Image (cartoon, rainbow, N blue to C red):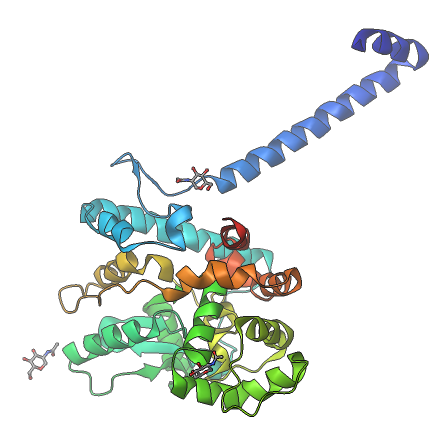
Length: 352
Ligand SMILES: *[C@@H]1O[C@H](CO)[C@@H](O)[C@H](O)[C@H]1NC(C)=O
Ligand SMILES: *[C@@H]1O[C@H](CO)[C@@H](O)[C@H](O)[C@H]1NC(C)=O
Ligand SMILES: *[C@@H]1O[C@H](CO)[C@@H](O)[C@H](O)[C@H]1NC(C)=O
């Protein structure tokens, strides 16, 4: 059927035009194939272990909702194999971050920043380590582990932050110390913040309702609040508030539970060699201790499965598209910089 058309085509147009069209089509096709290939290779699981012939970490399907069983399987693997795989994974995350920062035109120089820029960076001099502390990323485990490390080193003061040092002292540490940060899937982090601050702990609930509650109720509730003591802010209300107000809010000890993590740890300015993922903490926590050669001093606390991971599906299922869209916009850079995928989170949430 194509041939009569072709003959007609050749007859009725000049040969040059025909050749030009063919070349154009071939080029377009090539470009399409290339794009497809790139997308495909980007989506391929990247962390393959050639030694064990097994895919080790980052089965992305499991990353957001690992069970203790998954963790036990991972932990039972030979440590050297695990460490090599983790080392490659850190390198991969570093590369993702570098290319994102480059694309966003960040320059990796922290010298001209004000001191408060570094107020979440813990300094552990005995270990020549800087550790960026992000709320809702296993904060209590980290406080315990890092505190224990300082005690073991007979440090007189447990935690100092990098903003307390002079510019020279700060730069010396930024240049010569190991730098690490742990991050978390952004929407899970937000949900976890809501659960712990608006639902599960009456003391926090009281504080947060006082701080944000009235504002949220005034903005988003049609009927005036009942005379009850509690406002019981829902996740939907909180998510809506965060998407509306988040981009413009000042970072303080409350908002730092939900502002994008990159605004807290400044990964395009501080050259982190270790970018840990909360979801994989049970292997990456101990690996971190080996990485700073302190695994003989303390051990990482027992893994507690995240309750947020389990509730995510239910909570996201009721969010209107507008809010989901707002969340993915608000946390876009976190997703890009730290190698998470908002599509995966949302897919997981809507799939049954
Ligand atoms: C991940 O999930 C997708 C769809 O649910 C499935 O097709 C794929 O085989 C899974 N991958 C692994 C490694 O289990
Ligand atoms: C800490 O102090 C104890 C007791 O004084 C000592 O035995 C230990 O060697 C010290 N550790 C370090 C790392 O200095
Ligand atoms: C509201 O919050 C309080 C305090 O956490 C809790 O006791 C109460 O059950 C909640 N009410 C509803 C309707 O969830």
